[in-house]
Image (cartoon, rainbow, N blue to C red):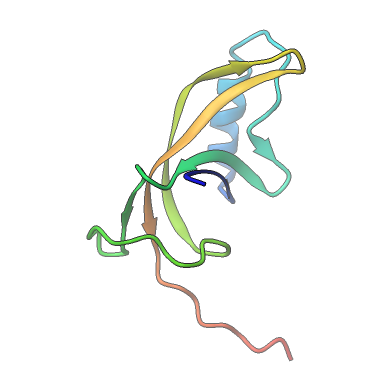
Length: 105
């Protein structure tokens, strides 16, 4: 599948900006802000991926748990019978160096 859900942990100021954006419409909102982060769509065929030095690179084999900088674009809204919300799309990702795993003991 090319379009997948992406959940990103982000700082409080980003969450506040998204809450303000969501509050600008008067429809039954399903928030893009989730308990563990912000949800957006990522199109694997069009997202631009860069390494920590800003050079274009390929997608990682495993996405889960990666530390990234992301560009999210509010590309519009959606509405169905059960609710509505903001469309957030990830257009660019910068893959940051992976932290070495630490021993849990």
